[in-house]
Image 1 (cartoon, protein in one colour):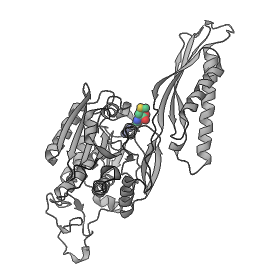
Image 2 (cartoon, rainbow, N blue to C red; image 1 turned 90 degrees about the vertical axis):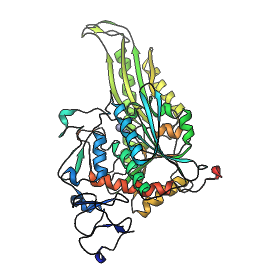
Image 3 (cartoon, protein in one colour; image 1 turned 135 degrees about the horizontal axis):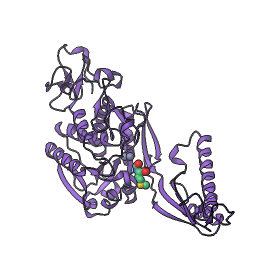
Length: 463
Ligand SMILES: CSCC[C@H](NC=O)C(=O)O
Ligand SMILES: [Zn+2]
Ligand SMILES: [Zn+2]
């Protein structure tokens, strides 16, 4: 409910959410309701519309919204691959649990790899829980291409926060925490328990993180009925939501052949045969690209992609090598017949000649689709809130691989959702950044989503 601003005397601040006067906890431009911790700024009327972006931008730390300050603190923790400081991240979440009065459990899934679980118990322990997952690691940076230090969380005069992880996905971790904080201080309780899991190593495949965690008794004890995990920003007004993922298949093709002097026409060389396989695979790539281009209804995640990412072999200009290899990053669409596709790869190798083999460095075989219709009560609750908030959703298949695949594979429906619209897609890119107003709007969105999800009535399987 929004207050009717015109009827309030000027000079007051009013919490639009709680319909009560704000207790000012900071200086004049940012007013925070000490009860629900929502902030508001600028002259009357107070709104949270993105159209007031510039008005929401603060200049110094004194005027900054405390949720933004917390976000920037987290961005400064260097959980960057390949040597993330996970210890600092775990300590950060333990402190959040202490401050919020949440349960905190640490599960070491491999030596030095801890999953931190923060828990807000529901009122009906018979019901399954809501899992809010986020990974704590971030990808490396090319520092020389950044306008600001990627681990300083610099905020420019317009309100853009520059940092590795600003979009992928440290924003989401803090948005979950701040939404829970608001709901908790407002005195709410919901039937279903809410667990927030903060997991390591997603950016390198989740093999020392979620892949192990979902097999542990501690995971099963959470009794997750539904999960939210990361999505991708959307540059338009709409929000992207992912209901499935393509399966990563990392394939190395090794070709062996006759060696010899570089001046001679050697027959049956490794390079010739490798070239044939590369040509077959790149022709397939072109076909999928054309299929995507020619059908406006198809989104990137609905076709199979492949890139040639490594070429290895050779020792000298004048020595024909006996072995050469090519590595490919395939992302296989969920509707593909996996067995037939693997046979196709094998037949391209065989067609190239003797001594051409392939091996897999990653081969995900369990694609799952979370239904996006009202047969799925979780989707019904999620999409209803978005409709009520006038958010338009674009349901898609995630082109890349996230920890959602492990969650879905153990039978827990999951949606990939980062509440970031009007934001250029800058994950893994130079100058990754997020506007503070978009970040705060995301906290508002979770503040609406969580009550709905945590109040989904008992499912047939739960009664
Ligand atoms: C296949 S494991 C690698 C996972 C990685 N995830 C995020 O970027 C990806 O490349 O999709
Ligand atoms: Zn991510
Ligand atoms: Zn990533």
